[in-house]
Amino acid sequence: MENTAKRKKTLKIIGNIVFWLVLIIVVIYSTVALFSKKDNNMTSVFGISALTVQSDSMLPAFDEGDLIFVKTKFEVADLVEKFENGEKVVITFRVMKTTETGTIVYYNTHTVKNISEVGGIYWFYTQGDNAPADSSPVLGSEIVGVWTGKSWAGWGYFLDNTIGFL
Image (tube, rainbow, N blue to C red; front, side):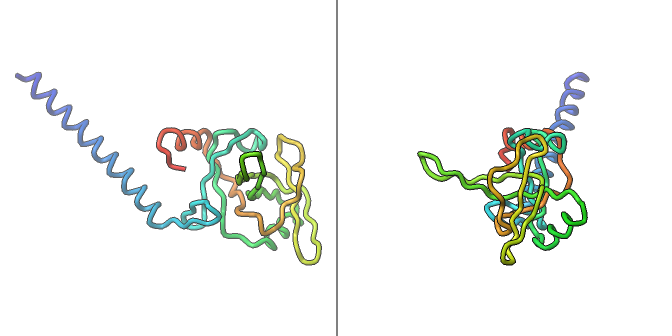
């Protein structure tokens, strides 16, 4: 009898913990949904988007499967100024690739290696820290975000695959 009472008490405690964890996840998810905005087909919360890294092209800065955070509110002129001051500038930009089955649009996050201005329009030449230079320069208007310098190792794949969050 005493064993049954302990078991019931233990199950009740476990049930309460599971309930509160689920409730916290629902509240967090609801808050994100409430305060998020979709810019360039990326969901951002307070101007920050989370993206999953798909390759090792930016090693050692971040690794495939990491979750990186990108500011979606920025000025191109500020990026140029940072670059000219010798700061490392890592941008996320939209890439369109035409295949036999159609056009694929994806995002790439690479380091700015050079910037040129032609007629008041800025062109950004990028390269992954662990990859050859990108074949085409990026137009300033194609930049969709600037890496904040923050990443969570392995969390991108975890959230994509287990929760379907991103």
